[in-house]
Length: 413
Ligand code: ADP
Ligand code: ASP
Ligand code: MG
Image 1 (cartoon, rainbow, N blue to C red):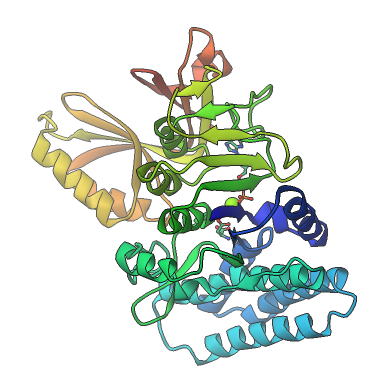
Image 2 (image 1 turned 180 degrees about the vertical axis):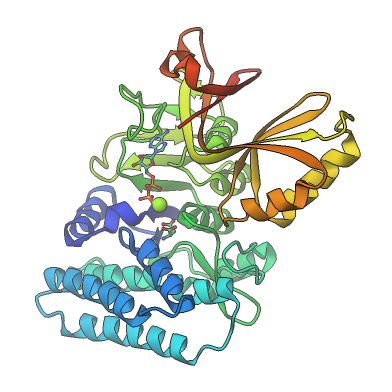
């Protein structure tokens, strides 16, 4: 079995879907399980639906916009789009009824029941389109396969049940299913965290003992920097699992960080390739040399906050105090991307996905003096050399740290 993953960019419109069909004809699709994300920015649009719903604004209008967008794509794809349009409308009617009837105040639960629609509908359209042009496939509801706990928005996979379910899938055929979503023990929909479809593909690869996994992207492969922010990038032809997990962890968003661990465990060869030039080799992630070619790799993380806590009475920041600070960060779901301590202070570069920073600062301000630089940038340079940091202007620099081959610099935005 091979596993393919197509992200939002590859299926963002009718042309994208036709391109996926051509790609499949070119590279083959026998005994393949294909994991697909929501089209384009649909997940963001569905997040807006949830926001409008909880803020008692017109969420139905938002749903209608998402529905129209999908129906327009279907009309472009199918000579007779009546069936698929009905299916799409039915789907969004169900979503509207769910929200109308819902009594749960649990925002994360509601979020998962709403945003899953992006993947369910994109896979429906793609599967029906491919079948209509003779690329015969079977659509699977991934919630029958990937089982998770009920930590909505960040669900943890129940590997035992998931493996049991996926191993029942015949290893011959061509399947299309959703990335990003799963279901909890009560069969409510769960999600694996934003951008989680790469991870879903890795789960399938692991559980089917796949011969390989390929994620199809709008870039030629893994580059030594994100081409949106850096000029003159270079393609990495080969990287080891260890290097890939480090790059992803530091924020190279071309691969979701959770993707590597299941693949590494079974040493499943993993490719990152271009859906625009599918016959190009792209990047191979497998055992062996850390990095070919060996060049510095640049990663930029935006929307970081630099917090410096220092003791009010000139006392040391001892381990018990550190432990208290980290418990509070954990409880507020704030991620620490870098830290540096001195006798009486602790500096941390924080990522605040859930907007809990103010609450955390309130938690600590009785005990510590707080200094805050909001909205800073964190640069990470792997395998840096003497000239690597020239991209960063010295007077913007707030903090610098080097650990072996990794240099990290926090700068003002
Ligand atoms: P999808 O969701 O469609 O699977 P993503 O948008 O998540 O794809 O990932 C592709 C994007 O990742 C590229 O368009 C690029 O801007 C960004 N990116 C970040 N870091 C890198 C990198 N090191 N190499 C290549 N692309 C990168
Ligand atoms: N559609 C989801 C998102 O945009 C999952 C993914 O694309 O990987 O976050
Ligand atoms: Mg994505």
